[in-house]
Length: 68
Image 1 (tube, rainbow, N blue to C red):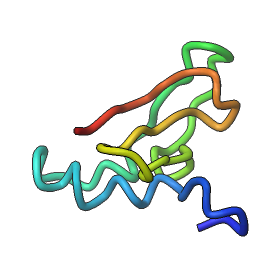
Image 2 (cartoon, helix red, strand yellow):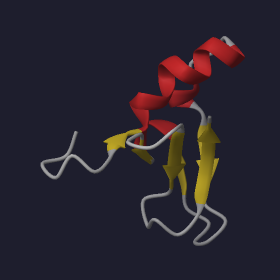
Image 3 (cartoon, one colour):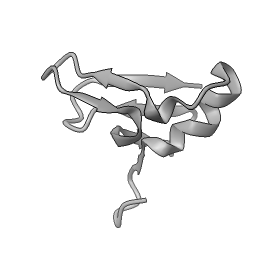
């Protein structure tokens, strides 16, 4: 976690998404619809302090995934 404990990196998606998809999604490459940057899912920011998990891009402008 970061020093502020607000978000974790995309590795936090590994377990919840593996339960559903049965693959390691942290190595999957995603493209930001805002800036077009491509990056591994391990680099997204994951907010998991609410019901469910929300993953957003590094610029925090586009939601990448939401798991409830």
